[in-house]
Image (cartoon, rainbow, N blue to C red):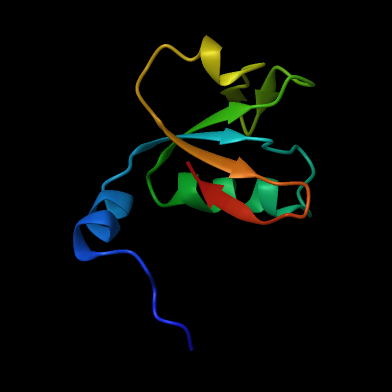
Length: 87
């Protein structure tokens, strides 16, 4: 198994994230871009959907772009290959 390249401070910051904007969040329950944010919500995270094709996902307002979000947030982006990346 590969060793994680993040140091302890970086890992602590990841666990302290509360407000997470999910770019590419999906309404399709079978896609990771739906069920991962849904799980995070169940664990107490505030998820901010970003998807220009809909105005609501999981009973939360969906933004067309991150520039519309007025609060501070951490960015989680779902890539087309269904991999995730923290920005």
